[in-house]
Image (cartoon, rainbow, N blue to C red; front, top):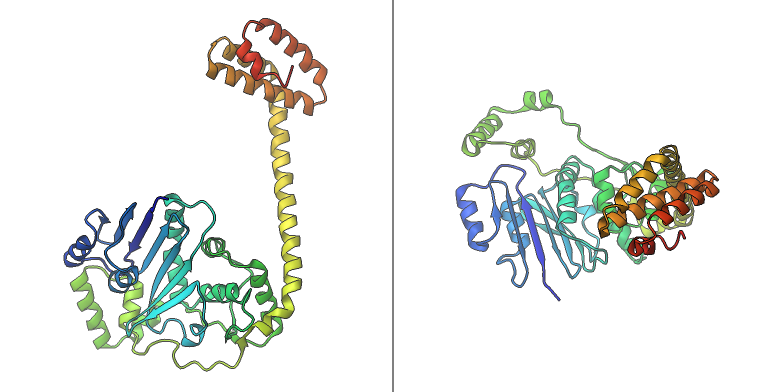
Amino acid sequence: MSEYQYYKFERLDGYLDAKARQALRTISSRAEISASSFQVYYTYSDLKAQPTELMLKYFDIGFYYADWGSIDAYIKLPAGTIPEALLGFSSDGFHVDQTDEWQLLIFSLEEYDEYFDDEDADDFFQHLAILRSTLIYGDWRLVYFMWLKECDFNEELDGIPLIQFDFVHLSKEVQAFTALYDIPLAWVKALAMALKEQPSHPAKQAQFQFDAWLHNLSEAEKDTLLRALFEQGLLTRHQALALTRNEPANTDEIYQYWLTPDVINPFIEQAQSQLQQEQADALAKKMALEKAEKEKALTDIYNQREHYWQQSQEQANHTCASGYDEASRYLHQLFEAYQFKNDIEAFEHSFKRFVVANSSRKALLNRLSDLL
C-alpha cells in the first residue's frame, strides 16, 4: 500500500516573514512555500513537524489527508472566540488545542471510505477561510455538527448550550463540511425542529460596523494598529479586531438552556421522515429535469436525422477504429431518437441501407450488433 500524504496550510492574517519561511524550509526542503502558504506531499516519508505546532505558530487554516483514509481540517481562532461551554464534550472527530492566544479546532476522520485526491482536497480547502470567518463572527454551527454526529450513537453525550442558529439554510461552504464529515442531516433537521419548540439563547453573530468600531478606538489602540501595520505591511480585519479586543470574547456567558440527547431525540423520527420525503422529491425533480433534457436532445437529433445519417457514413468511410466508434455513436443516437418519435420502421429502413453499404466492414458491424 502506498503512503501518500498531503499537507496544506495558509496564513490569512498577515504574512510569513523571511525568518518564518526559513524555519519552514528546514521542516521540508521540497514544500511549496510562499509568504502566505505551505504545501507539500509525501509518498514514503513524512512531515518533520506536528501539524498542530505549525498551525499554532504560523497558520490560520490547514488540511491534511492520507490515502489510507485519514483526514484533518484545521481552523485557528483567537482565544475566547468560542465559549468554553461549547467545547467540553468528548468526540473522536473533534478536538481543540487551546493556548493563551489561540483556539485551534481540529476536525478529524479516521477512515474516509470514498475516493479522495488532491483536487478534492484543494476544493474543500477553498471553503476553510469562509468557515473560519463565520466562526469568528459568532456562527458556531460547525461545533454543533460535530456534537450531532457524536450524539447519533452516544446517548450519554454531555450537553452544549442551546443557541438559536439557523440549521435550515446552509451555505455551500457548510454543505461541503457536512458532506465531507458525514454529518447526519436528519439530526440537523431535528435540531432545527427542537429550536422551534424549546427555549434557547439568541445567536450573537456580530455584524461589523466600521464607523462605530473606529469611533470607539482609544489612542493607545490606534497606536497599536499603526505599529502593527508598519511592522507587517498588511493588517487584516481579523487582526485589527484581535489587537483592539481588551477582553477575551464569550468567556463569562451564563447559559440556562442546554442541548442534550433528551432534547433532540423526540424529533428524530419526524426529521428522518421529512428528510426522506425531501430527498425523494429532490430525486424526482432531478429525474424529471434529466428526462426533459434527454427528450429535447432526442428531438433535436430526430429533426437533424439526415445530418446524423450523413455523419455516420462519413465516419465509417475513415475505416479506422475511432471512425467506427463515432459512426456507432451516431447510429445509436439515431435509434433512440427514432424510437422516441415512434418512427422505428423508418429507422430500420435507413439502417438496412447503411448495413448494405458497409457490409465489408466487419469491425463496424460488430459495433452495431445490438441494432442488427
